[in-house]
Amino acid sequence: MQIESTNGPYHELDVQGLAIAVFKDERADEGFLRDLDALTGGAIKSVIDSEELKGKEAETVYLHLIGNSEIRAQRLLLIGVGERGEYSTTQASQFAGTAVRALRGKSVKSIAIVPRLEGNPEEIASVVIEGAFMSLFDPDKYRTVDKEERQIERLVVVMAGADETGLKRGVERGRIIGESVNFTRDLANEPGANMTPTIMSERAREVAGEFGLSVDVLDEARMEQEGMGSLLSVARGSDEPGKLIVLKYTPSNGAEESAGLLAFVGKGVTFDSGGISLKPGENMELMKYDMTGGATVIGAMRAIGQLKPPIPVLGVIPCAENLPSGKATKPGDVVRAMTGKTIEVINTDAEGRLILADAIAYAKKLGATKIIDMATLTGAVSIALGDVHAAVLGTDQELIDEIIAAGKEAGEKFWQLPLDKEYSKQIKSDIADIKNVGGRKAGTITAAAFLKEFADGVSWAHLDIAGTAWGDEAKPYRSKGPTGIAVRTLLRIVSRAS
Ligand code: BES
Ligand code: ZN
Ligand code: ZN
Image 1 (tube, rainbow, N blue to C red):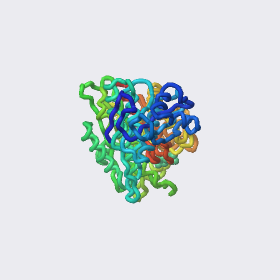
Image 2: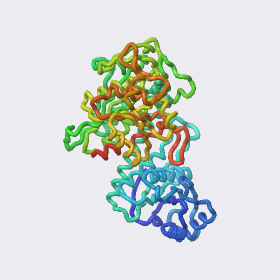
Image 3: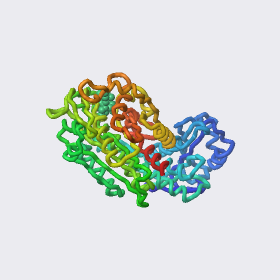
Image 4: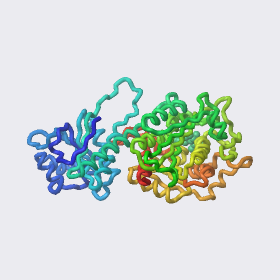
């Protein structure tokens, strides 16, 4: 797809389809819509008067402009974006996604979109292009019959009067981010057989080679040397060996890590059967996406390699397949983590925290001073927050506030849960230092309390994306399946820190 931007008038553009944002209760006889109404020969007044178009969010009206239209595009899609006062980057990004998905469905090959958001053109062009790219992801990679192959060849973002270099930069940034989010979604969507720890590490190597990152992949022998008994205890049940992927971006300006090193750590359980504490069969196929946290880190690093921020960033992804076998860890077993802490494994299905424990410790060994880990860690987070917010918890309130604020800008919602020390009582073990489950109460919090044991001495926050990483239903602006949650927020955090 060729992407462009223009600061000229939309009605002269040589495209097949034009998508325009319309605010709630907007009138056809004033401002922007009055001009549009005149250009279309009265079509806008007609759809507003007939009450087909009220400007409610995601409402769409599709028209063929024939007769006395002065707009070069023949097809017009009007999309409601809700209240003008609440219209911001999140809504503009979703507007663009809705526009592109809807027009693709109508076999339109070239599209101009008019987001009508005031503000920084670079910023706005970026979120619009991000939304457009993200809307084009479909999970039907392995479908061979009845597959719709409609493609959009050209997309133009229209911001009348905006600074041209800003627009161009925004379009490029949006493309990098949108493609990287889709890269993450593609990994998350892969069946377990096609996304083993070995394959995941190969994908990370390719990304590193293509985008100028350094890469190191620890095999099980090296994990052994590092004393990563917690990570190894999860990998043990499978014939597929575990891997620990390390990606690093170093800015070319040579700015060293005097100001600290930011690290992203992501859970890469390429399939979670539960292990000996086997999960019920219903919906178990979805546990292929239990490596989404890891895929998020690889996707973010893929974008960082291209956006080239002035600060270094580390990515650490522990990968394992959680299966039952004669070699698998059993409930009651005690394992020793890299830090020396001993862990009683009460439930082998609480494996994410076991692999993250050693990955967080390793990130610290590599010099990380600020760590954000992300994981499809607990079913409990869906009970608490549904599929709307991801949970954020941690030890550094400033970092948590930063994540929530960056998420707001990026169109991703994070909600803080408490992590008071009282919760740590729930993970005390009778036989070892700690145990890997904390009972029925506050499951998301006790999982974070477990991780906290390994994150001392650094600024740390944890994102539980188990409820938000997979969309059960399609939205107007995106397909069902992997959502790519958190990639855009991580990239905002990096650019805000730069
Ligand atoms: N991968 C799961 C969490 C999960 C559940 C992710 C649903 C996505 C959707 C995790 O490894 C797990 O099984 N957690 C257990 C922990 C429990 C045994 C303490 C859970 O949430 O039930
Ligand atoms: Zn599990
Ligand atoms: Zn899991």
